[in-house]
Length: 326
Image (cartoon, rainbow, N blue to C red):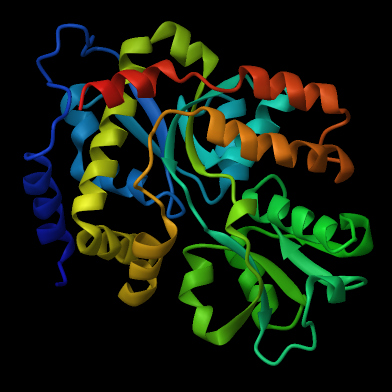
């Protein structure tokens, strides 16, 4: 079933009425408080929340939205406090904290498989080991970059053995398409959109590090009730997306300007919405396994900085309360 933008918005709102969510009459919420958060096509739940207007209802309209083109952009927005809440990969959140940005992960949005190594059709690159001496497009500070670094290590190589062209995700595909690079560390939705025109060189779901929601520590300290509302609203969107995959795919297709079938692949096969929102042991395990790669790839100076960041990264209480309220 397809929807126009107007009918889709109505569908989101109507469907949402059936879900349990925090009430706009909640006396704990100070309706004069505001929040600035990001939205992105790599985070379909942000599109649901933004399109539905649920936060505007809960906070009396005091909501501002900022677009993030990648986890690196979201981290930069958080670092300069241009946003209070931003969505990134788990790897990017850990990198930000290890690099001195005072953020914490407040919710897990999906057990995603949103990145892979991609080559042109009929490429002579047939394995990750074949990338030695080649040029690969990857966005520094994002899951695709760390996916690439882990894949290289598994193949007995390092990032020093290749040339990395640091391009934003969409530009990475353009470089691949015009033969400026030999491979691309791809990211959905761009990767899914051009799947028929490319080939997967390497996939590994275990090298993806979850889609997470982060907030600045200053925001969490100053506006914990608003932060709780944001997490509960995201949980509302996650439940809605699970119940309405076709409508969620249509929304992603509209916002990302990709075809509906590609959007369905992302929503139904790669988003992993059926997951607890509470950051904890599973996410820590994945990030702990990745931690040595931060040092070996040169993005963090020492292992201690990564370990200390991981020990203090999660603020699970917000998602725990949201989950218990369902």
